[in-house]
Amino acid sequence: MSLSLEAAIRDIFGPDVRVSDRTMVSGGDINDSSLLVLSNGERVFLKENRGKSEDFFTAEAEGLKALGAAGVIDVAKALATGGGAGDAFLLLEYIEGGRPMPDFWYGFGRRLALLHKSDAASFIPGGRFGFTMDNYIGATPQSNKPCDTWVGFFREMRLEAQFRMAWHYFDEGDRKRIGALLDDLDRYLTEPKAPSLLHGDLWGGNFMVNKDGCPVLIDPAVYVGHAEADIAMTELFGGFRGDFYRGYHDELPEEPGYEDRRSLYNLYHLLNHLNLFGSGYLSGVLGTVRRYS
Image (cartoon, rainbow, N blue to C red):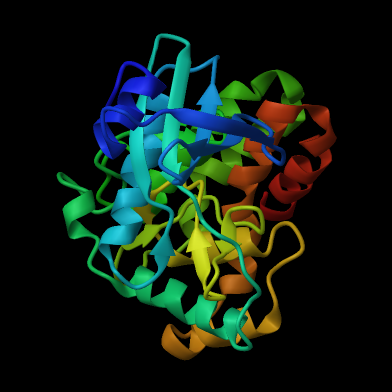
């Protein structure tokens, strides 16, 4: 942690190193991003958010560290966080891009399955599901309070939290259906054989291809949960390539009934988009609620 970007760069690269060039990078909805070239020739990636405090990026850095600890899939390395109130930054290693290797998607799926099969116990003291700290899903605070059951965690920390923020969108009939869905959630969701460390926000914009043609995970919303929640998210906005799912399920076979549960997992993300971006996502939310209630 550093109070300023300049101090962070000096701490990491040496007292005489400074930023010699900055190029803005487009693509994010929440943060400002830049490629920095340093006076020693190194390149680093900078994310800034002038509406957040340092904990916004500290949580992301801890999530990246947790994903990397499994040692089965490449993860962008966080170098430093810092800033004052309402002026936060995260300094990351620069990922030099490349072309996907021929078996990129199969290998990506297999690596994700290995992540999901890794021991997650150290990331959730006091329970089986949650995380060592709260974090964010996009710009929305995400509570990771420990819970002993997956269904209980997903009900309280995921769906109920988002429904409370979106309550003004729903009429009386909708609210009754939402209540019935939440009450009956254990009719639809199942407990996993073992908890898994999840990326938490795994869609097509939250991974990169490095110079070796391998996947690199970025922008996580990490917690320990049911592996199906990560897989469901990959299918929400168009889906990944078929070889991805073949590689994943060759390592971790699909459990019966997953297709009936997928929309419930993705209801969380639709609700978050409704709360972040507005009523364009309301029909998707209501369609899912009505399907299950």
